[in-house]
Length: 158
Image 1 (spheres, rainbow, N blue to C red):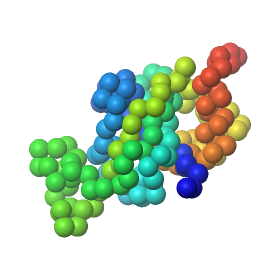
Image 2: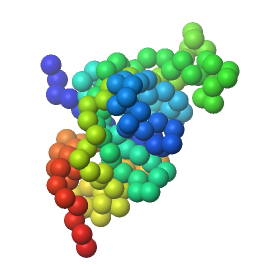
Image 3: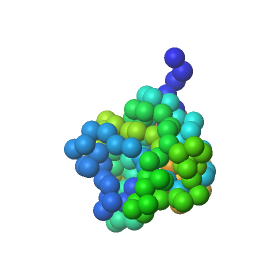
């Protein structure tokens, strides 16, 4: 078995939060309409881990951990004309958009804020810092370990 890979999933907490995932236990990560983010999901395997990131809120940051529980498959919202994620150019015979399923693992002891990530020299190469608008993105094993350690200790004051 190959070693787990790591990712970051962004969601506005007003749309879907870590607490929603905890309550529901698992969800399809649907509605992604960016080819680069879709391609990241195509590389995911069951058991891979992801940070759950709250965006468009104050403070924005990493609030929890989820696990990929189903690999990429057609995103049903692309075929639903009533969905805000409907894509008339996509068809069930040739689906354009994919999604994975994720399950709740844990809420982190504290939020690791975007400000903290940007200020940390060990994290300057993170996709979150370099291409912050990407909603699903890879995280290196070193970045993963560093952020988990940050989340488990008191925040730095300065």
